[in-house]
Length: 257
Ligand code: NAD
Image (cartoon, rainbow, N blue to C red; front, top):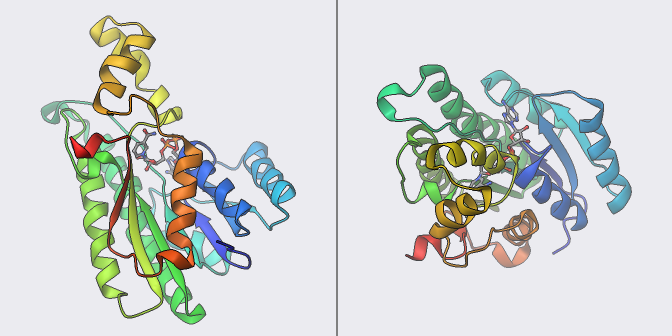
């Protein structure tokens, strides 16, 4: 499972799943590039901490994944890209007939279009290096639907389709492209949904978690960022060389229902 000497760029990785994946890739020896649209001391400190803990060259590069030119610049600034994890994502919940246009555009740009731009910029580097791994973080919502998340669900279904297409375009090269579809993971993105749901249904935090969120997940447990990181490391390993164009669900059985 050693990823020593590989450069791994993880978009949207100063919190949650992206940060968890970055930590696991660095533990496996990869030089990770953390990213978000902010440029705070704590962003760079996170990278320094990972570098110190793992003895790798972790860095942080600011780039706004809602902007195509910044997505491509992230890959160029990193200098090389053996592993690309398209993870940046945002969420907004609203009925489709009152869905704010700016929120729709931002979700499609960050959750879907960014992966087009980073993939297009990274593929020539992977071809030059003779090896590459692309892992797109989709969602159980890339395979199923639920009301009021139309933009998110459209973007996540879109990235599942893009994953299969990129896999076919690279099938005869030493490059793979797969998607991971997480169920609920208790990250800042999910935390942000809890207060509104509590208000809407008049429920306690515990009831929202149990009866709105984990009711969809037969395991009745959140998946963890470490488990997502482990799945990403596996997809980058030698053992996964023939796994391409697929989706791996890490959802406690959600999509088996
Ligand atoms: P999170 O809010 O902790 O992480 C989102 C990351 O994206 C953050 O690092 C944030 O800084 C970054 N980001 C947001 N806008 C950006 C922009 N314009 N440019 C660059 N970075 C930006 O949430 P998370 O749950 O860790 O989500 C990570 C991914 O996992 C998302 O694609 C999300 O859709 C997906 N996902 C999450 C869950 C879950 O239950 N948490 C389930 C399925 C899929």
